[in-house]
Image (cartoon, rainbow, N blue to C red; front, side, top):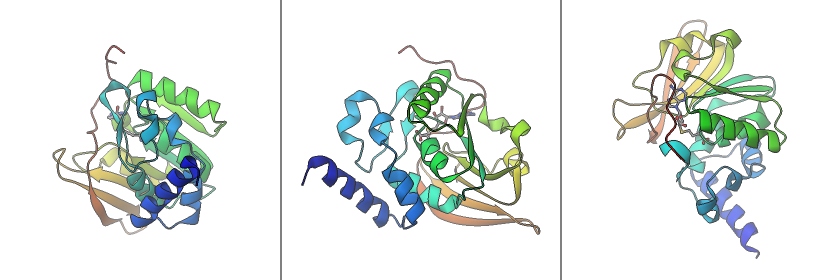
Length: 216
Ligand code: SAH
């Protein structure tokens, strides 16, 4: 079997082993070329189930975690989605294939610009990348049907709950330290908030304010 086909099969196997069974999610991930979102030096590891370093000291998440989070978010074709922490733009690209409209916010200007260019190159025209501070959410576009945080918050941010539509779902890692974090799903119902704990995870932390980009 050709190397590429074998890599793709292993990639899909890792996703299924992590409980990602949604056909829509698996298809969206299969169509998204992860090798375009990782630095050139790591390109041969793009389909391994591992997080990889990207620019500005950040990371592109592990594919099985991206799959789990996307599946838990339960994105439909009419949804307006907010992602906080664009990073490489990989998660945003997958969301763009599942949702009507995606907004994604990143505090590092360099990452935001790169992701914007790459998403454009891939022809994903329903994503808007915003250079900004995600701790504020994106009030002028609220409410959102779905919100996903791809950096760890100390607690479930109240502003984001406010920007979630009724019936909406938010998925996020929550933890006081960078060692112990729980992936949480929050559903906003007419009666209040329903919380489900999904898995133990490890993400870079949410940091308030715009970033000063390190030299290349
Ligand atoms: N979803 C990304 C991985 C995200 S890594 C991907 O698919 O590649 C987490 C990202 O969150 C980092 O790029 C970090 O800079 C960003 N981040 C952390 N705090 C932030 C904040 N307050 N506002 C916006 N982005 C933030």
